[in-house]
Length: 351
Image 1 (cartoon, rainbow, N blue to C red):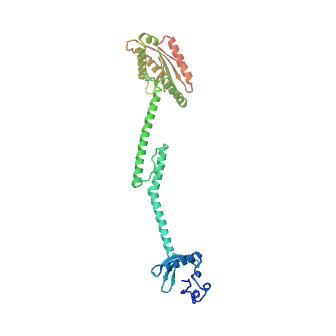
Image 2: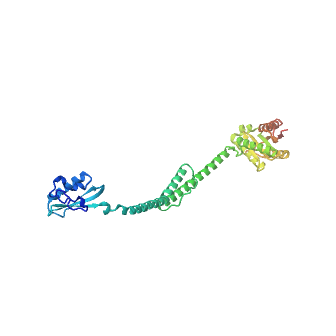
Image 3: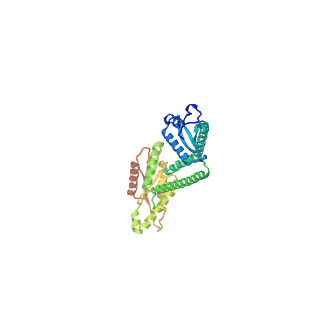
C-alpha cells in the first residue's frame, strides 16, 4: 500500500526490501509514469479502493503515459496481502492501428469510388439534363425559339424535359402563326396604302412606285414603255348637276373600263380627282396609240346609270430609256392639256 513495486517483468525496478527501506529509498510506482498527473490520479484510485475494503471484483481504470506510450491502467486491491495489482495494457497491442490501416485505406478507396459513381450517375441522370433544360429555358426567355437539343432523361427529369419541349413547340408554333398573320396583315395594309379606296385602282403613291420600277427596268433592258393620262371632260358639271354620289359612280365606271381595256400586266391608277394614269409596258408607238384610242372610245360609248354620256381627254407619251419621271409626266400632261384645248374627247401623243 506504500506504492513499492513488488512484482514487475523488469527485475531492476522491483523493491525487494521495501519493508526495511526508508520511504525515500523505495522503488515506487512513480518510477513508471512520465506525467505527475498520472501519478496523482493513480494514488487517488488506490486510496479509494483501500477505503472501500475487500471487494476484489472492483477494478478501477484510467489512461496513463509510460515512456511516451499510452496505456490503459487497471487497479485492483488485494486485501489479503494489502497489495495493489496494477495491470497495464498497451493500446497499440490491444487495438493495433497498423492492422486497421489497410482496412481504412480499402474502406476509403471504396468510399471514394462509391462517391465518384454516385456523382457520375447524378451528373448523367440529373445535373446534365437540368443544366441543358435551364439553358433551353434561358434561350426561350431571350426569344430564341429554335428547337433545343435536349437529352432524353428518365423518370421525373425526363417527363419535365418532355413537358418543356411540348411547351416550347407550342410557343414556337403560336409565335410563327402570329408572325405570319402580322406579315400578311402588314402586307395587306401596305397594299391598301397603294390603292384608291373608291375605284380599287392604284392611287398616286402606288403608281409612282410602279413608274419608278419601270424606269429602272427600262434603263437596264433598254426598252420603251407608255404613259396615258386621262381626264374626265366636264366632270365638275356632273357633280354639280347630279351630286357627288353620281360623280363617284362615274369614276367607278371609268375605272372598270380602264381595267377591262388594258393588258393583264399593265397598270391603271386614279391619279387624283377625275384624272387617271395608265402604264403600258412593254410598249411601242403602235401599241400606245391603239390602247389609248380603245380606252377613249370605250368610255365615250359607255353611259352613266342616269343615262348621261361621259367622255375623256387623253394625253400620252412613249418613254425612252433614261427619261426622268418628271419629264415623262410633264410630257403626258402637256399632251393632255393640248387635247382639252383642241375640243376634248380626243387623244394627243407627246411629240
